[in-house]
Length: 190
Image 1: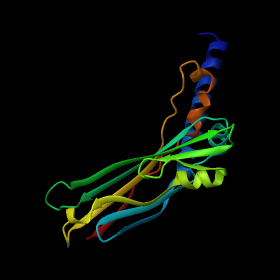
Image 2 (image 1 turned 120 degrees about the vertical axis):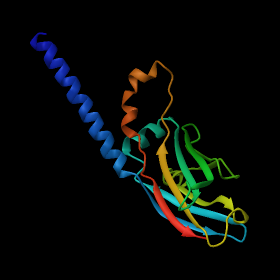
Image 3 (image 1 turned 180 degrees about the vertical axis):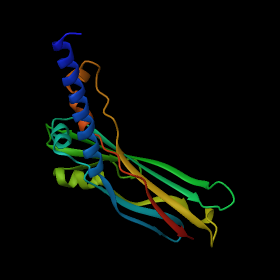
């Protein structure tokens, strides 16, 4: 192989490494916060929010009309010492934001919210709607046993953007605004 071929491969590998490191650094910025597990008279509820999910590149892409979808995963298990934990609930929640440039408004659809979509004028209000879950029903309390130990886990991630095939080459940079939080776990006794 000649020198120019080695240089091209070297630049290619360096570029891949920079993209990988940049993506890893951005993924560490997003995290779940304000996680609260509580109950009403009938249901077990969870409240949570994700911080650090919106990067400048993501905001620019959304304001150009590209929709973004956050996925929230919530799992509830009954902890058992001599057996495998019993899965009680496995929820996948989606939040999608779309900007209408003609009306200059953001529509946020939340799969768990019956009043969806919510239309707002402010991007800050739209980001708040996208990054929070308030009083999500996880399970009915009559399905839980008193005095038993349970574990609830939560995680958030940005869904991969699906584009028409011809735009994949033009918008390859979109992978730089992916994020995925770690799993957060709360143990409790009902």
